[in-house]
Image (tube, rainbow, N blue to C red; front, side, top):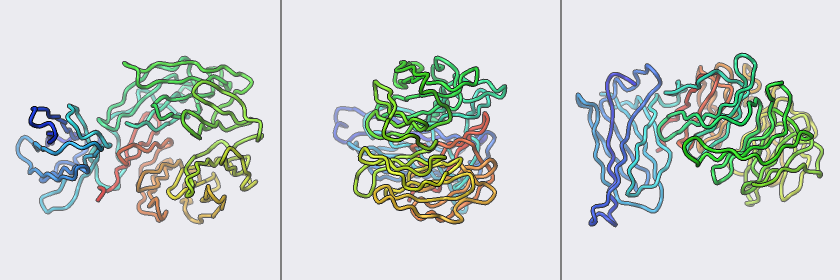
Length: 417
């Protein structure tokens, strides 16, 4: 963090119980990329609570910024948006928290501050460089599982990035090392991990469930060992509550207690994403060497037989799924109608096979040395940033976590108006 300290104290005083003396205090800290001076020119700090709507400001003193804020309690959640302005009134730094209960609670939130529309190093990094990571979104951050070490050996590490304080917690190591896992998260916060390469570099058929809610570092349950269904470098796509499809041949279905092959289709491409259609019916689209396949209303439909090598997929607003393959071709699939629309020139020529992440406002394409940001609604390009990542994970505060080796970086969007 910059040598010019910046901190804030947010006091939430619920109006409904204030007469009883019940209040909640949220200590708000600010952090930046290591060695960043982005906060040095900040002279005015604005803290905005989205619900109930409230805006507070403070001017820098020798001790930084101090704010004491009282707001009414609400049954809903709100987020903190923090903006830093220089002496001329220009916005030079921004950050936001995930949504949290605005009630009589005591908590500490740390907001990562950066230049709007930038990709900068996170305050923390992985203990060891790892490739072939499995990434899964959590309600409070993102999970990074397994991967391959610089020695070529798989890793048993589980790392959890917390978007509320920008810390990295090492979970209980997996029962065995794996690279190229398929990972999925249920609404309860339990993470399902299947397959991957073992220490002998052979694909495996083990299904673990990792419960992130059990202190201090989570706990595992083994739900299945099916060597005849072994696979690696596949994807796990949610299709219901604690229910997933795993790509490969044959496709697999996972529930909270079971693992079984599907017999109604021979194979599914190695990338997939799920989204509800405009008619409200949930669906998933898989892309890869098996072509383009939709799963909807318990039925698989081949939408396009053309192989999509190295495909990556991401759910878009309006019941759409984006598909990008290693040739740079991009398609948009309407999951309700099955319509497939080519998207020429979406992918930069220098980055034919980007990794993808979608937030509420942006589509982020991660390349080896650059990041490309698009408007998620129109897909119009907004920015090209000279820092990339091989694994992307959207965070609940509208940032995107980028992992490359042991380095973690954050895409920070402009503040939400």
